[in-house]
Image: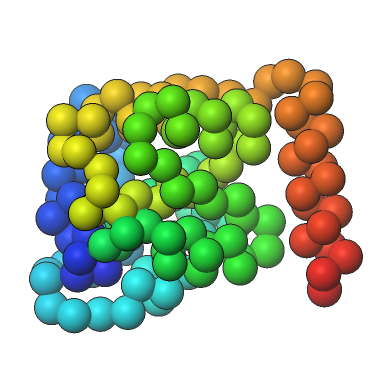
Length: 143
């Protein structure tokens, strides 16, 4: 998903995803006409929460707002990443299921490696899984 500021990057991601063996579920937007990023971040986060998608990617101008919005959906952990190292860390340490990107900040040539790092990494170490459980408890306590 993307807002108008992230539309072109969202479109650019599709062939990279296909090369990695992933099928894209495009939740919009479908043009550069101005829209509100929280609507698309929520749609992507809900698709992940309800099992329509294993992972989600949301692109807006900076990536921060979409990250905040997606993290409001119960059970979703979204991470704003600007490079492969951050994407790998988000998966391995935080078991993030949603990647947010800032169209103004991510380098187009970095997209293939960034996607591979996010989609190809797993949260496997016990200490990281324990910390993810702590994050989930905070979510429950905040209700």
